[in-house]
Structure formats: C-alpha cells, structure tokens
Length: 260
Image (cartoon, rainbow, N blue to C red):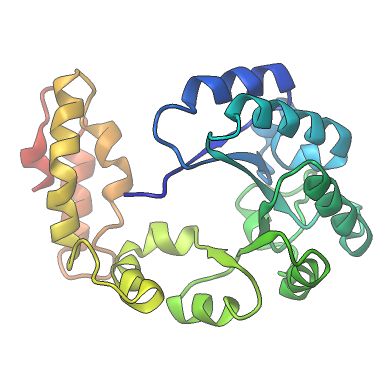
C-alpha cells in the first residue's frame, strides 16, 4: 500500500548519501531520517535523538540525502523530538525547525515530548516527560509553509481527527501496533473511501501472497509473523492465536498454514 516510507538512522553524511542512493529506486515515496530515537544503542552510534544536539551535522546529513534523492526522487523528511535532556524546547525547537526549513526539509514529524538520553529507558521515554502539543501547534504557526505532523499519545482515530484541525498530519505508533484493527476505519473516516480490506481476516489473506513469495526465497516464517501477534487484540480467541504463532512459526518448514 502506498505511499510508502523508509526510515534511516545515521550521522555520517556520506553513508546516508550512499544509503539513499541504494534505496531511492525501490518504490519508496519518502525517506525519513530518525532524529528521535533515545535508545542506548542508537546513542552509542551517535544518531537518533542525540543528533538534535548537533544541528550543523544534521543539516549536512540532509544535504547529502537530498543530493542523493535528486529532483524526482523520494521526499526527504525528518522525525524529531521537542528536544533532548537539558534543552529548553521553547528556545531550541524553533531554531532546529528553522535549520530544517533552511536545509529544504519541509516535512517534519514531531514526537511531542523531549527525549531524556540519560537515566530513562526507551520505554520510559515514550511516557516521560509529559506531552506538549501546544509547542507543536506553535511550530505550525511559526512555520506555516512546512508540513508539521504530530506524534505521541494518540490512541484513537477521534483524537487524530481533532488534531488535524491544528497540524497537517498525525503519526500513530503504539496504538496502530497494539490495536491494529482501528486501522480498518481510517479510509472511511479520513479519506471518505472504502478500505481495501473490510476485516482483519481479509487483511491477513491479502498478506498471504507476499508471505509465500518470501518463504519461497528461503526466509523463515517467524520473521513474517512476529508483528501479527496483536492482530486480534481483545478479540475472542486472540490468546490461542498468539500461542499458535509463538509455538509454531519458528519451526523448520513452517508455512502459511500456521497463520491461517
């Protein structure tokens, strides 16, 4: 399903140039640079949210990606936090957004809380500190020519519709992963069109040709079912479905019969 985005992580402009060159012809509409992940592993590699401390390097990375994408290539975008650690987002975020704008990055997804890089786990960083939607709204007011997308704490489609009166778009993360059946209503509520699949089972059957094509290349089923475990969240029989996937998908020669 399109539009389709790919997210990259890195801090080396040459490597990001080469990565963008390698994937730009694979059908992606967007290539996003992750400037928001707070995990220790990401920090050790000096990318993710840690990059928000070095806006000059971020600008160089985006220039490299834009050069690689070319005029007719995928759109290059940013995923950021409000700031990191001891930064005062009211001061630093407008400066960072202005740098992105000046670097010709016009589409920015903002997770509406700071990243605390020392002392909090990635899981804690999804809830601490408190969300600050108002600051994201302010960025849209100050940079009206940019596409500002709100991320963080959105758990229902009703919330998303409400936010679209203040920003250009929304990104739903955990809610889409943990309760994926809410996505069945997106087409009707947001785009006034019928969804490609009416039920979760229909979506599962639509996934089958892809699964079988990948299995034919020798990849194990477990890598294709790992993210299906929440498909029937809060539906009778969900526990048994999860158990079957957990116990059988990793077995040798496991095939589509395990899923269906």
